[in-house]
Image (cartoon, rainbow, N blue to C red; front, side, top):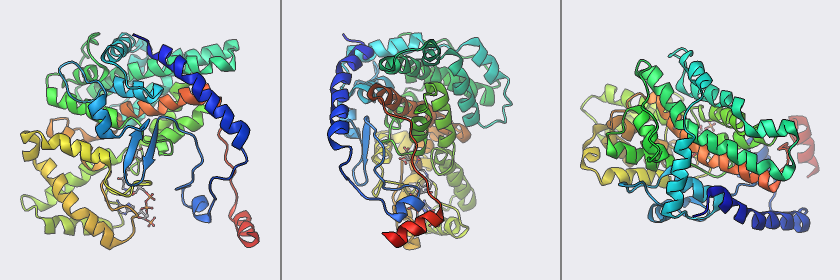
Length: 438
Ligand code: NMX
Ligand code: MLT
């Protein structure tokens, strides 16, 4: 059985060759054009960055190295006694482009468990924060402070060679992924469980199994399985999403992976991005409160219009790239469809009813380019049903997950020797000159 690093060592040379070839032969080849709408519209649609692990098709959704979510569900190893994809098998796929064997997955689980304990200084830092501080701010602070132990930074100071960058980046990334569950669970316990002690990491358990245990939900097999699926399929969403892009940008300055990912978490904490996870629940509960038991399609429609007319967005709907229902939304809905308790849950039923009317209302409203649900339309509601009701915490779980993809690209960026990211900006005056001369 090969280790993750050995497998990467095998696949890197071919990718480096591919990159060298593209750079040498095609640097001046034109593959697209820049419209004014790209410049003033958040660079939407502009193909301007490399990202190896996944590509997002507007109609089909995400593919990880060519594998769709249903492909991954069939091919990627699950945890012992479980059925859902686990974070380790997704991480292996994202990093290497290969489907890991059962043995490779277990070996990675063990490595992560062995590296998962938090240093005492991080525990003290997190314990010193006010419990009123948003869990995402706490997560970002904890991740940034973990750079105290960055091997990339230490080796950079010693003058490592460029060809070694990826190896120390990988070491930091694995250490960070390993420590995220304990960090995220400590934040949960401090904020919502009066700082109660975390159980020790079980070396025979997968990353998310341990995370669920540390949160205090390990006995709930269905919730643990849901968290495995959730964390695997939120892992990567190509490179342009705000959090992954932030990690990529910051790391391109050769900041270490910890501070790069800390910055990414700040982007994830915005309501148009990962915070939509919590916002959907807040919106649903407010609707439930207003409508009481009288939840009909008509009432939901009225509530949607009320939201839109007050100038707010409908959280969980729309997307920067997708133009159909998010396959992650579908995968999580299918998880619910196989479990009678979830099918009977009022929160899940409301997700389904909202899905039946919201696209029509959003189409009639006529603003959004995509009236279909994204993953956030359902992800938090399942957590809520299982008793993890503290919705301000939901984006933290997204943050544990997104590390898989965002950190993968840091390894690839360093292996390929990608440069500092530094696009050209222009003022409106310059833009108008360009318009008149084009
Ligand atoms: N509800 C109401 N209006 C919307 C919605 C929505 N769900 N989605 C887009 N619009 C509006 C948008 O605000 C914009 O209005 P204006 O012209 O006044 O600025 C207009 O429709 C055009 O926006 P689009 O080009 O369709 O969307 P864009 O690519 O700019 O933004 C999102 C994408 C995801 C930010 C946007 O759809 C949105 O705000 N959705 C709700 C928040 C959400 O669910 N975010 C989670 C995304 C997934 N994630 O996990 O990160
Ligand atoms: C994500 O998973 O990052 C979101 O769907 C947002 C995006 O892709 O832009």
